[in-house]
Image (tube, rainbow, N blue to C red):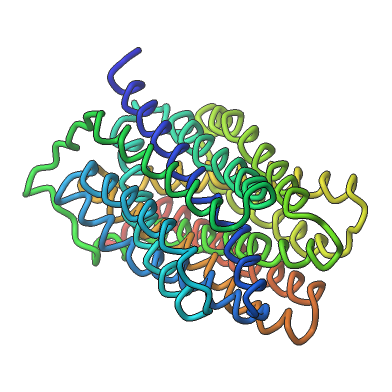
Length: 391
């Protein structure tokens, strides 16, 4: 195994263990909050606090990984996840839950840009698709497994023990991180890039916008499907099964998608098409009540979301040198968590007042509008590169 492949393998291992532990909290926090009197709007506020902090902190912490090194941010992120998981069962009120879950957002904001930047640092030329596919496989595989494990733990042992199990998993990831070595990105001081230079690139903005659009629909699904499922009589384990199917399908699509990106050397059409298909699936989700069609739909949603995720990562990696990769990936993380936060917070009042069908439908429409706008930016950037310079 080459040094680059070894580094990608280490990042994937840390990513899987850390996010499996962190995502155990995903379906539990909404259900735990409702059990202590929270409404759909209150649940949306709690989850949005987590995503908003992650969104706001990802750019500065991504930039910090360019300056201070990737390993420092990785370890800090895993430690934060472990501590906040231990603190969640100590409180019951909505404000306290939002505060602790908000601080937990710092953990993912520190970890995610550094992990994605390390993959970009290690990927050989022409193989970025496969490198990001393996990273995304670990990430989204954990997103699928984590909620399932969290649902089982809550059903067997209760919410408090499930949160402690989440903390133990994050602590295990931290221990593995301490035992591994991560090489620096070898960035010279003269190669530093400012945020002004990055934000002037329309391809970067296109990637950020389509990422936010895709994750807005996921914010709706991950936050409010547990409540929808509970209202229809599903147990926590059955709700976890839905997310497991979604996660497995999402994960299974990643490696073939990476091969496709490397083979075609095109990513933008797959990013936009995948997000648009995911928007349609989101709007349809509340209308399915039978288990078979429901699981089939979430499996399809996972496939198109997985393909889009790899495509966005490859597209953004192509816009960044190592000197700016943490900054660009920090913006990518901000877009992801901002999309999740908007899906959680903005759609909560809509669902409270008009119901799940309307809320999920509005989320799908807004996500589709963002994806189309990103496509326009990519087309404009391509045409500008083809247009001859003025004399």
